Amino acid sequence: MSTYVYGITASSHPALPEGMGGVGEPPRPVRILKAGELAAVVSDAPEGLRPKRKDLLAHQNVLSEAGAAGCVLPMRFGSIAPDDDTVTGVLTERGDHYRERLRALDGRVEYNVKGSHIEDAVLHRVMAENPDIREQAEANRQAGGGGYEDKLRLGEMVAAAVKAREADDAAEAVRALQPLAADVSEGPESTGWLLNASFLVDRNTAEDFLAAVEQVRAALPHVELRVNGPLPPYSFVEPGSTEPAGATAGADTGAG
Image (cartoon, rainbow, N blue to C red):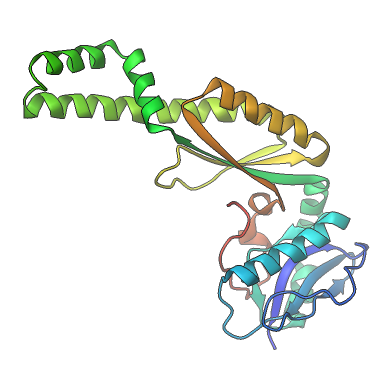
């Protein structure tokens, strides 16, 4: 039977709660596979696993329980190896890499920060900052709204100013938060977000990081910031080189 991998940790990691269940229906019992100084938190892999809410939460719960007792390198939802021997073989082959990552991430968590513009507020901001836009808007108003070309020109000017403001606001937010983090991972660009970044934060300084987020909110009132965390450090384990050989990676439960 194939093996579902939740995460990788040290073999000295405290035991998980007795009878803990993972993904699947019924939940598959979670167990530990050890290879030298390393261990993998695993269960049998259910047939036809899909990223349903129940299983996503089960995956997250196992990592939360394991992470509460010590550092864990989290695997993405849906990481499946052909069998137990494959998992322990990879732990042995890539032992140096896993041990280095465990040392680097010990005592640290991930906070994902996403930002988007509040439409009315950012339009007011770009109008206030751009005399050319104000001049064009006033000319259109005096012309009874302006002709097609005038309206098109105004729309293009506003769109360009908002686009520039997106880049500036994202950079300002990252500059403010980066000093509070050990590392930063920029997420993929996506429609609707001007900022999508994950920050690796020491557990002991998490309150300072969240306070800095509030300062960014105050400094950029035209930006809506959403914070997801603390999370296992999904964005900092280099999944391409840490997932067990032969594993298939499914949906990401970490970055929100």
